[in-house]
Each structure stands twice: as structure tokens, then as C-alpha cells.
Length: 128
Image 1: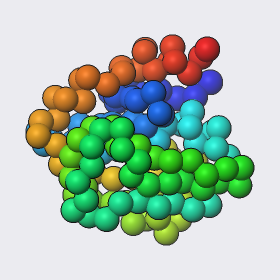
Image 2: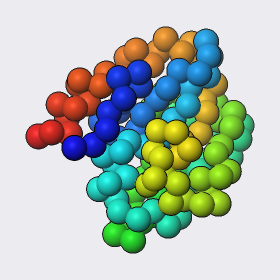
Image 3: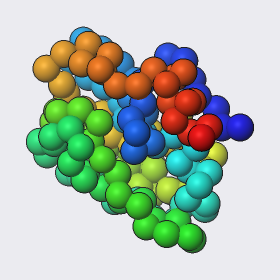
């Protein structure tokens, strides 16, 4: 069973969102997603300053099994990318919710993360 932290929000595309401040959220892919992908060998992320719309493709993760798109969970502007994860993508496998985060987005208000799935709803999505 994959870990699903209660303090995060989730998308149906298997991204997670953590509120960092009033206007900044951190984004990554879930433990479920990294497990399904297998060994991650390549990560492509948007440039800092890129404006994203919710649902827009904003990168890709390549594993030994497949290539999968990463989707923006919310509207926002990329403020920070996790260079360590780009350099060593396997950190997403070993630490998807901590060291393996992907980007930080500046959003109009972090409260919009409340519109995403909570842990129980995400568990329901992944257990079917």
C-alpha cells in the first residue's frame, strides 16, 4: 500500500500539493505514481518564471518502463525547481514527498489547494 500523507492535497493525475506559504505551494508526484513508474531515470521540469494553467502538461518523468507527463495541479508561476531531482531523478523513487519534490508554484492564494482531493479521496481513487 502506497503512503498518502494527510497534510497534502492530490490530483487524479497523481500529483501532490503541499502549502508552503500564503501564496506558494510545492508540487511532486505521489508514492503511488513513482511505484507504478518504476525506476525513474530522467526528469524534465518547466523553467522558473513559466506560467502554468491547472491541468497543463508542465514536464515529464521517464522511467525504465515508460514516459509520463507531469501536470500542473493549479494555476501559478514556477518559482523554484528542484535541481537535485533533475540531477538525480531516482530521489523521486526513494523520497517522493520530501527530497523528491518537483516545483514550487506561486499561486494567487494557497487556499485554492483545498479544491484538490484530500488524502481519503485520493486513497479511494488509487485503491480501485
